[in-house]
Length: 226
Length: 412
Image 1 (tube, each protein chain N blue to C red):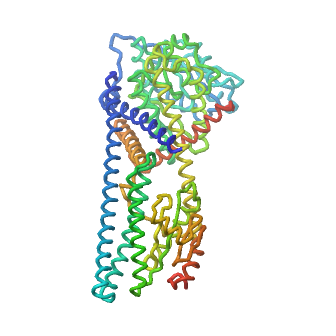
Image 2: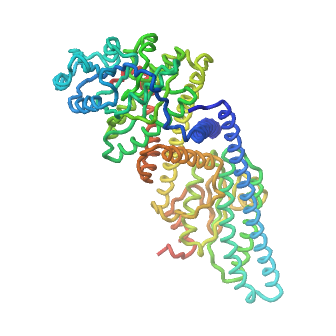
Image 3: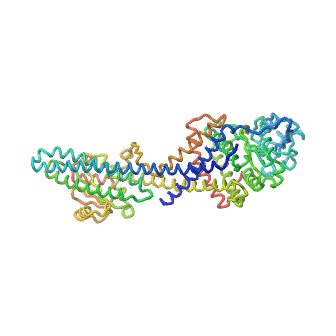
């Protein structure tokens, strides 16, 4: 049984090729991740344009005609936004284990802007139509500055899964430095993180699931109140 | 921490992948030669061989070992058996005395426990053979073991020959996994390593040495707890090769529970580290041939692998604690956040490295077992157990590092 030195060289070449393949595959996954996020954001934008059209139509054809359509579109958008937010966070985590990718930061900004648009439309809807979804605004910062933010997000995710149709949660990343988010923070007097706003009332600090249900029940008679 | 983790992942991936690729290429290239061994021609006279056994409290196994030696297919006048009692406190002495005839089977009775290496040296010094086989008292050999191994010494550079080590008593699940491990690690791997002259151990159950080489290098090191490993270093240092013969085997007993496995491995791994330190002068030295590079490569892989194992364990446990503590805020509603949807796009670069590493290891084990004759049944549970054992060994390595660093005494 013999081995010539050529085997060591061939093995080195194969190992390097495998390494390049892994990085190429990762690059492919990165591209796919970005493609999925961009498509999701496009969907969100289309949903928004549809809602905007319906909103304008309501001025011309009357609220009764458009409220029903608006309600279904907003419910749809709520789900699309939520899924997109989850995907952005998950893909950002998969991509940014080692490097900081500006793409996801950019998408996160766009996502937060869309959330504000959706939130504003929802507020209008509540005035025009008999649409009574409870709105929750959630303001957070990065872990180093807000050690309890992960826990609060976990509680809200759990609640959203349980009573998805009854609440609409908007999560805002205060680290992004968006003027619109800053305006909301000033309006709702956000001075510490995590901070939750339920129907215009501000509750800063961490609230577990039971406390959050109690706070929700103060404002709306949701199914968990019984 | 993530930067350190990333560097470790890359180092371990490179070292392990290169090792796997070299192994597989060598195996594929020599697939048809694995079981071929040199033979004596009709004109060659068979050499005289001495088989030395050190026995300490072996009353249950020694008779079986001697019986297997009596059935060896080799002229009776051309081999002798020397059994050295290492101060046994049981009935070993009386059992051996039944077989000892002072001619073919010689018995040396030591009343005090000197240690295995000292007893082997005692036997080697009175051995009449040109070649000396050292064997464990709890092992049995195949009939053709001398006819298959001695022709390797026709090459004057051969200092020692090792054989396939098989498991005698694979009764429980752990022993069946160890059987698989021995077939790979103490047979096929040594065969592949021998092709680039990097056999790092002459396994205790049965290995045969050129007597003049043993004399030249000063016999076994009495102070080393892994004398079969240590002597391999000195054989390489003295410029001789260690060959492996897969076409014959020795059967040996294995630990039957995790505790005794830990004790065995603690001795092996601590001994390996002590030997490495003892022979640090061989590392990266050209005159030691590839062996001088193979050893640091091997131990770098073990050390970095251990570092990665520790860091991964720390990150996994801290993540698990963090996740479980998060559930405390939702009344431990575990099912609400449970998602069974697999999203390939969520796979990070570390996930891909990890997956490729697992695939590489499965390939190594599968191809290895496929090339071994009489390999154990390819049972998925054995594969799973083998990988589980691999993780367990990381803990054993850690314990051994600790013992060596803090100079704790490791006993047999």
